[in-house]
Image 1 (cartoon, one colour):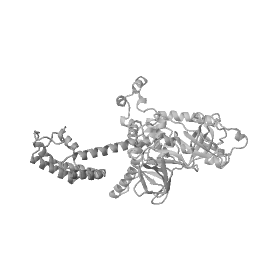
Image 2 (cartoon, one colour):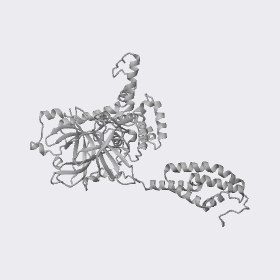
Image 3 (cartoon, one colour):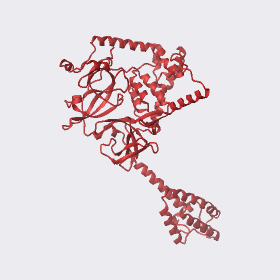
Image 4 (spheres, rainbow, N blue to C red):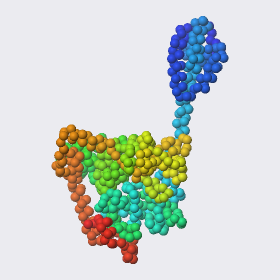
Length: 567
């Protein structure tokens, strides 16, 4: 436009009369929205002062916008009245439509830039355990053969460690005889009185990174990875033990394994839909209904696992069935009894059935000392590439299984001491000790970002030794059953395990029929191994010279505690 003032011959007459009626409502909406955001106060005052000093009702920019929209002013008295009305509305609200739109767009742009500048935390950093200092990679040994007995140095551990988990340690070098700096020592972690009174279970650990020996304290920093489950056979002097390596049994799909060899080639399919159609076809040729076989397959639990991983935004999980079962056991909220059952189970399908049941329940975390509710599993998230629960080591050498959670229940915890970044397990975050507000028991730590743009801003790390998992559904079912019994006014009769009508108990009895052929084969193999073990031919001794020198501790008390697994 060449002139700021529109000409008197402009043809638009009806449009300006419609503008003042809608303008107050639109301006009020913009001002109310921007006022809540607290971003436009300075602009409102500046625009109001400029409009009071000017004789013209609108700025050149506003005139251009009105002209582009087909709303140009006349030189009539009616149009002057309309202009005065718009000026009054603009003065009352502090700004006009164009300024409100511009300021709101500026706010949205600034917010998008702030979100773009936010730095998502690198989950690779916690897995490096950089707080331990500089470590050197060392060579290890191969896996041990299941069913055989090995002699290993052993250390006690306070909780269950599943294979595949990285365990950082600060330990006395003399305990593991770490003399050769290039040797990746293999040793065992034993869980005394953690799982069973009959056997002492444990896991073999392979050292893959190690630091330099501290001459003053005699300690050494190690990064180890748990590999294979075992149970102790005989305890020896010098923190050594004979251990039996436990097998990992992968049973075939009970429905597909029943088909002939000619049809077996149709069972393998990349399409899940094709596999389901094939199973539906096979179900017509077997004595049990299809849903019975589905109860003891992995399709149902894998579907639930996919939903759980989507909730946690975790993409990288093991594809191997054995590794997957152990990964789920330490990354899904499971109570202590079920964790023990999972560790004792040799068959993968047995572990997956326990995990399947746990995924159907709403769980929450409580203080182990006073049962104060701390948080919900809905707030779990993976701060480490290894999952929601990872082992970390403090300067004293104590290993904590730490569960990461966004927030705790309101007024359930409080922090002590000043924030510190020293020996922080999560680089870029400071930590504070977190206590239970009810009993002041140590629950874990609160981590707060030291960088402005880090996400999340803060989170909690709960120590596995201080919390316990409870199921909401299980508690609710018990209360409902108690209420029903009270309403009936009579005690529910007790059924024998073999005669129970409980669907869950009937479900537990079915595998004996479904898997009896494979179970018998496995037991026959174990019997063969036992016979060879009794003959002493399958015994693998790592350091046999110790017993020759009288270093073995074969006293009666140790043999009573550590029962021979070959019997």
